[in-house]
Amino acid sequence: EVQLVESGGGLVQPGGSLRLSCAVSGFTFSSYCMHWVRQPPGKGLVWVSRICSDGTTTTYADSVKGRFTISRDNAKNTLYLQMNSLTAEDTAVYYCAREQMSFDYWGQGTLVTVSS
Amino acid sequence: QAGLTQPPSVSKGLRQTATLTCTGNNNNVGNQGAAWLQQRQGHPPKLLSYKNNDRPSGISERFSASRSGNTASLTISGLQPEDEADYYCSAWDSSLSTWLFGGGTKLTVL
Image (cartoon, rainbow over all chains, first blue to last red; front, side):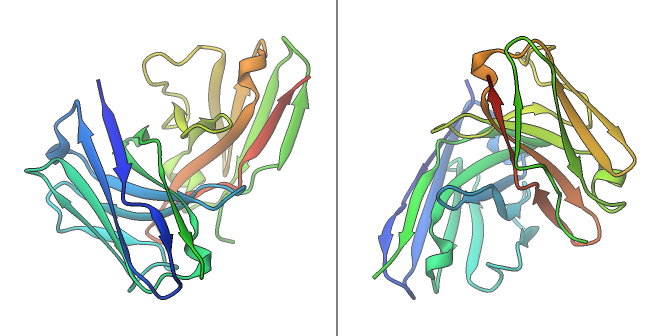
């Protein structure tokens, strides 16, 4: 069974940092590109970042470029999102998702709240 | 115009048919096609279709997708109470080199 489990969310002050993790199981992690997608409270889905299987090809939304870093550890079957210089606009549920034709499997999400 | 445009809400009766639309441009929907995702309240999104009308295993045939030019559509037939959810379209934009989501359509089953 394919599973994606996010962790690392929480309350952080503006300007602070947080690292999210997404532990996967049930498939060959190293064979897939992976994404982070976020959803602000009461709003729609927003694509954040993508990393391909070897970890060297990464893409970011303009809104997070230069502040967020996506990475992966294929030996640990884990995807990461390092988030720096956080602002209130980054408050959202963050989902990791597998890419197969589109976003075919999603985690349950982890809530990040940026507030003083 | 960047982004994918979806109507904010659609309401239909039980057992009726609903058609949801998603309008993009030649760089995304018109070129790459669109995927559709369903998100029930309090749950993560679930993929319903991709490449315009391929369905993942386990997705009901009541969900049918199509595309005409720069507009993708999702048709849900025989509406059931459990179909009440938010529906999002998604596409890769080859000009922006980014994945796009529509703003979502809230489907109400009366």
